[in-house]
Image (tube, rainbow, N blue to C red; front, side, top):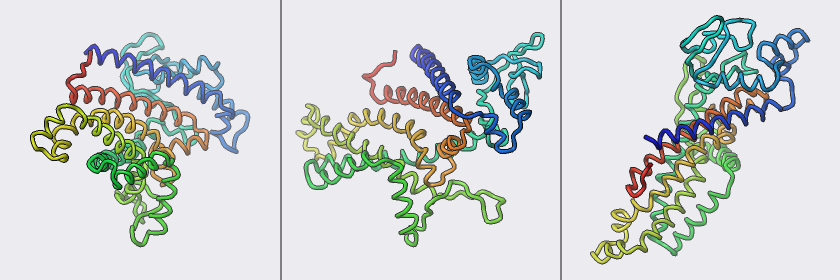
Length: 357
């Protein structure tokens, strides 16, 4: 319990740091958000109205505290409609906990403001629509990486220093070295264009696509194949080498020699005794890679036209749609923290020698 409370406290500080960093980083970017929102149709009165509505005319420190207030699950708001942070139940939702004079204390989900470019669409809704697609892609990539990486690592250990071992080491080294965006371009061109008549795969496409009438969304499983393979290449390469190196180290220990003395074959020793002890460091690597896949999918999603959070971030950066970028970064940071806490708990379950205090 103390461990969870300590982790929760550290997580709050980490999220506070991320929110502070992204706010000041993107607030000082060149360009007037009010003009970007109005595009070519602005006039001085419209710009003034937009700046007042979104608080661009406030001192930066005031904007910062208002932003933290919107992110906080418990926040203070005014009922005065002339106030920048006035409480609008249609915008903030939530439940009023306390009310005094023209001020209220509410309990709500974090509010990431509204998009500058998508007609005031809430960033929360944009993330809700795109994050599941990114999660599907990340989970698929990690499943591919874990199962194939374990298999190749075991094969490499069984045939240590032989030709197949050297080939697998070379392939895994290349897999760690090649950037994901280059692999995405190569796979999209080769399997989606050159070999399309054999693979029947598309160069681009998302998980859900509208039918020809534009009325219903159909699940396109084949569009998941190429981006999930590309995104899984680097963690697959890392897992392959981790399993190989850990198994070789475990196989040199005394209890393994005892197992050999009982007449067990190398394959039996690996699967019955060595693999469980060799796999623990891989779990830590998987946790880090899975969390990073959520962020690392940005260019892969953009190249394959996968409508996930990564593609949304790239498009928001191109249009300087700052609230979308800031909200997405904070959500990814939150998921990274949660994943690492869960993996710590799993790690202690698999290895009783490690205790959480």
